[in-house]
Image 1 (cartoon, rainbow, N blue to C red):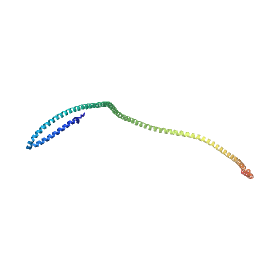
Image 2 (cartoon, rainbow, N blue to C red):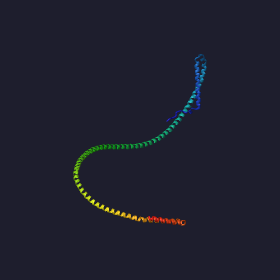
Image 3 (cartoon, helix red, strand yellow):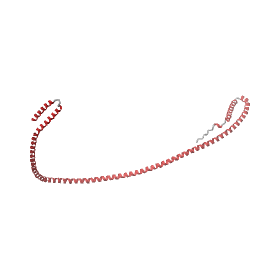
Length: 305
């Protein structure tokens, strides 16, 4: 709160100002006269002559000082009244300004209080929200710690399990390798015995099979030779019959070829004659007859050959 304590210039009236200026002017003149009097006291001749004059001046000065004091008292009273009135007015104005400032500050404080209450509500909601988030984070951290502990325990268990499994698998592999070696050795011995037994049996069966094959092959060859000899004789007879038939057909062909040629030539000549007669019927009848004769003779000659 700032209060203006500067007095306004309107509280001094113009009349009081004028009187105050006159008093100041007279005091200045009185001080100048005192200075001149003090200067004159240094010279005694002049001091005596001027004493009478100074007494008269002192009387006038006392009268003037009384007037000045009266005016000053009057001016002081007026000034006091004006100052009291002005102070009362300023006090009232100060109180009004203070009340207005207080009301304004109360309004500001009320608005600030409302805003702060809203901010507090928002902050409370945010605090609740953040507390909820923190609780969720704590819960998630707990869950993560539990999960990590479980994973750690699982990894340890898996580690021990896989170590045991590796050892167990190595033991099983060693046992299996021993079994395989035993089986391989036994099978190798069996194969050797089987191969020797097979060779012995194969030799005996080979001899028996060779003898049986020789006997069977001889019987089969005898049967096949008899069968193919009969077929060979039959085929020779068929070839002879076929050759005789071919010779007969050739003879028949030669006999039938000559009359066919003659008949074919006669047909060609007849067709030529008819064509010539149709083309040259009116103009060349004599030529046609001669040509026909010539063609007939030619055809007869050809038929003779």
